[in-house]
Image (cartoon, rainbow, N blue to C red; front, side):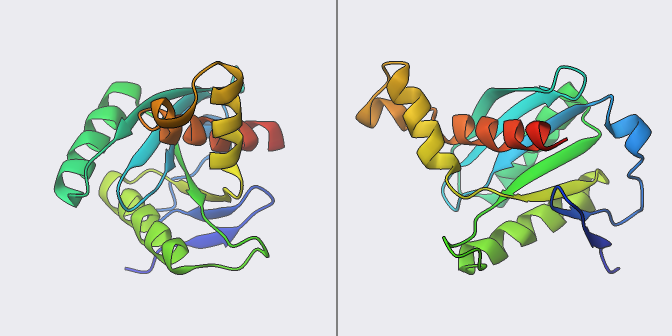
Length: 162
């Protein structure tokens, strides 16, 4: 089955089963993923509050384990939209990691039948590291939470764009 992929002002929407309903989504919980080959940062937020919070980091390269953990998060939080940060080069072009990230987003949509919005994540890790530095968390101490704070910045940028 071909995934529906539409471009919007907020990013690229992947909605295989055409379940996206703005009236429902815009009152719902959102889970955001900062995809990486080694780790996936996860953040959660509510449309009504337009506020993102770091949630967890999935520190495992096994897709089976990753998707089991994601399934647990989806069951707990019941989001109506998933946001995935799309890594682009500084000039806005897609990279090899961009392609892996898109595959991850399509798999999320296919497995959980929840619309997935891909949004530009350039500078999210830099912004997250800066936020952690300002909070007094520096250097190696950042490794444990950097990805989930990066997911928070991606999700907050989505909320700020609404």
